Length: 97
Image 1 (cartoon, rainbow, N blue to C red):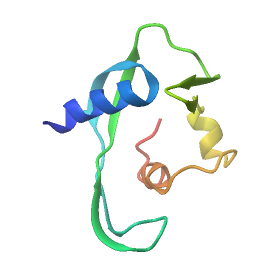
Image 2: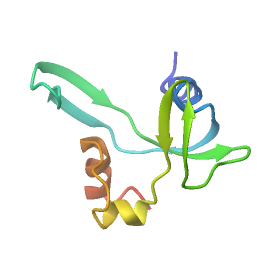
Image 3: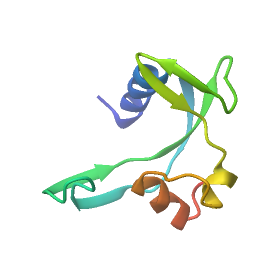
């Protein structure tokens, strides 16, 4: 299965949305799990994508018993939210606009 196919599958499973992939962003390579420090080789592949269909803008909703929040990138850059380390990685590389 291609990375792009994985993006489509995971997005659908986690949010119920479909997307069009715009471009591949930087890959982050980790040698330990951020949560536990356990040694492991991890590749985090990132993509810029556009959601398709009707989109719930910046509101909380639930899908498959998970709460989903859309966060504004400008607010993330201002430090309003704690985000995952891979999002900080993309911010440091100026890949989130």
